[in-house]
Length: 220
Image (cartoon, rainbow, N blue to C red; front, side, top):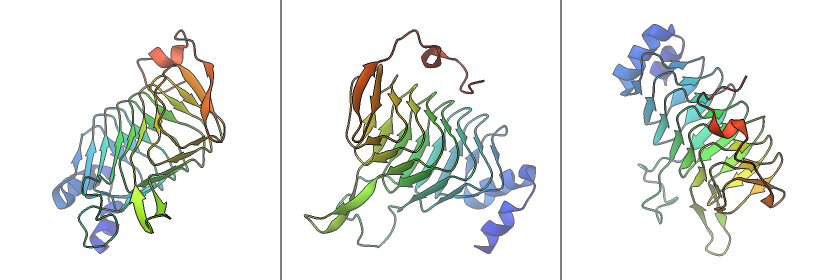
């Protein structure tokens, strides 16, 4: 713990080298971490990837960030690692406590991501706004034990502010999830706006919308 705290206050040029040598992380020379507590078991950051100030990421097997992927300020990213003697989730031997953020995808700020199971954010996707919750685990009241399922957010998607996404949910590529929606199951139809509690397809999205063909992740 003391070593981690010391690492966090080092200048970035020194801290990157320390994170690689002391913790075995793989961080591209152009990637950057702000004043943040980022200590999964394994961290891989591609060229131009960044994690902003005051984000916490703990108790995960791995975080993988593609080129120019971003995790913004004040996010809370937690999990339950697989290499543990705890009785929790022992009935799920294939579980992966991981976060994958694809190329040029963005998680903005003040979101909570529960990576007890895999959360995958597709390339060029945006987790927008504030206060969204991605919850991969819950209590199965019939079996009286905790279970988990992955969450997958497709490529070129836009997730509105203050949503709840539950384990097992899939948002297809080239889709939008409306603000304050509850995504609680797997959907397959692309080019749709999903909205509501629970979310369902409410309208078509035109393939001419420029967000879905952009070559740069940042939207001006």
